[in-house]
Length: 464
Image 1 (spheres, rainbow, N blue to C red):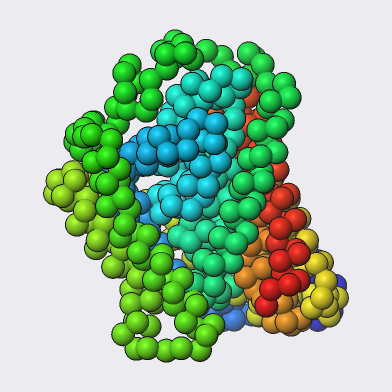
Image 2 (cartoon, helix red, strand yellow):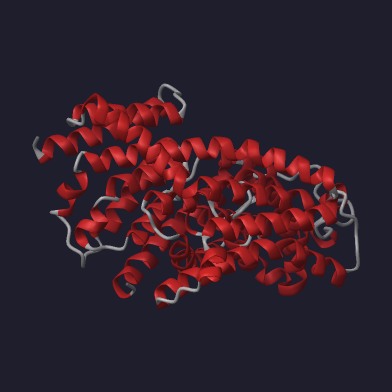
């Protein structure tokens, strides 16, 4: 079978998958399985080989990320129910002040809040960001919403335990500790630089009243209440947590986040020990990502039970189990497509056209992910599909697969627009017009996408 035949059929399978999703409104899970089935049968795997690739690809990826995703989503649901996020935003405002708040909020969203399911996180944080923006003046709402969107989306695909990040790490068999360290190395400067660019753009007048229709319940900018105060809804009080003095609230906020932060610290410690070649059995057990996140989940259950009560814990766990099911299935079928592509030999074919010392594979995966995202509107699907196509190239040319994972994640952020559910959710909760959401969400995250690949390519040349 010729190389051209394999490449053409791979392109046809990906195109058919995209058309099924956007033209015929087929569920992404079914469309991805259909694409993998066509590719396996067309490229000579046969009936048995195609079925094996689909089932084993799904199972292998679930073995890598299944428990990680479940533990992460459950921890996030508990943090949401306890009111920890609102408290964290209040603490950030007191600590950094309004001027530096866009940077603080975006980096916090990209790192500390990534265990929380994205749509839930948008529902909680977008109204808070709007209220903070009203206090800033000078396109403050646009600046805050843009910073929030950049942090949320970058974190999803680059920072553990973001759902897209876990899927990419499992797909490419990147150790989770390595993904955590390298992801932070890319995500933090990418987020900060993108927010800085957009702050400058908005200060130069790229915003007007048509972009932000006034909401009837908006307070005046001069007397706008801080989150959880005055005329704005107090989500913390509604959650049953109650109020406390500022110092007490900061202490409680730290307690609520401590189990998850300790879990991430254990994962990072495990990665450092692996690099150093040090193995201490009890520490290696605790630092394994599954065990670390399990310990984090147990600790989060304990602190949430104390803060919000046992009924709140049960409600949060029920919501978390429901959300994690659909996430796992979608990511799992991405593994089916990935193994099918690997089994037809596409990696060897593409590997002959790249060298280990070129940015071409990373730029190619970024472009593929960007194009897929524009068409499909799903960050996760576009990142997984692009990574699946280029994953076999990494061992063939000696490129660390973590860079392909990060490049696919960066590309999948390009041009989030009206095909995205999150776009419309942000638009309604932030009180922006469609045009205003395009200027903030779409442009801001696209800037982060471009900056991200600009950070990844040089780092991949200097780091092992």
